[in-house]
Length: 262
Length: 46
Length: 164
Image (cartoon, rainbow over all chains, first blue to last red; front, top):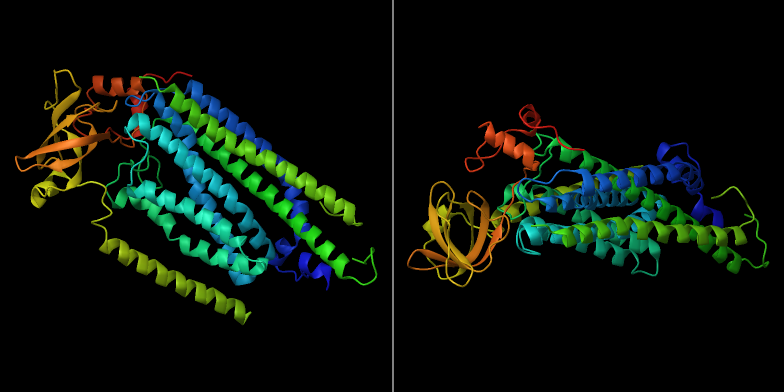
């Protein structure tokens, strides 16, 4: 058994394979990670303080509108995180990219956590404004389905003794679940829902005052960078853990004893 | 018509989730690096 | 190379199949995915005795808060074409006012009165500070009961400067 083959695929010179090299990934990500994390943390703190203390009250909702500055970024990240999970799964299925498997398995729990916070903050916003914690309208239900898809992927990836089969099964589930993303996005336009339509879109003028839009952009960008930083850090840990496993397995199966040439 | 408890709860949850995940991954990376250095003689990783 | 291309092709074909199947299913069941019905379609359906959700705007000048011991109200819900008289016993949500979007859960009685057991307030996608809303209303550029406000990019022309 060659320990090296499982951790360092041969350099073929192709761009994708250069990123597939876990050693290269550890070196590059180690350099950008502190920047991602601290810029993200700074923007998040700025956005949260701005939204909590300085942004104006809404004419209808009063100060309850401040929940928007944390609910909306988590809602965006719930969908964007699932999209990145599905992209990793696609790369894994087509190109058999070992790093994509690890990344997909690490995005899952982070995305599920963010989706849970999206649902919880939405509930905390719904009670004082709508008058209810939860309704089964198309938007809320489709986000709950997204949360269940994350949980399904987490469970499926870890359900098999052979990790490769788990990654394969999880990838198929994740790609099937992509159909839910446009349903979440357009649910408020296609059907009558209690949830209001989007205030910011690619088409059409925004329907949010700029004094409220700026803190939202700060916290959205900050939480996004934190999401990316956490995911990269988890993938780094996963790469190292896999290397530890293969080294230990190589050592156990090598006939000579302790020292094996790597 | 202030709804301070709802707002505070939402902010605590939203800020708490990245903090918890960051601390968790910090310990995970540290322990993985320590174990790797203990068994790997090469020094160019991590 | 060919195996990678084949896997790519299989995934794309599966994706197209799954996507169109979902689109067909959703369009076939779209009546059941609707969270509430409008007053016009309720009038078409007729009283069924079943629980339905009715959604629309609270008609101007129709809200009568009950004066007795318990909280409650009578008001009309309209979508511009038809309106339905609703009675409700209970505490109305904070955002309830004339011109506001609401969703009420209840039963359409044969006497033409919709007896609601739950009233939820809808809020729209407009977020603006109080001063901006007051300035827009004062300058006559927007009447909240008449329709949506002008686009946000034009608000600051008439509004006071936001604090902070």
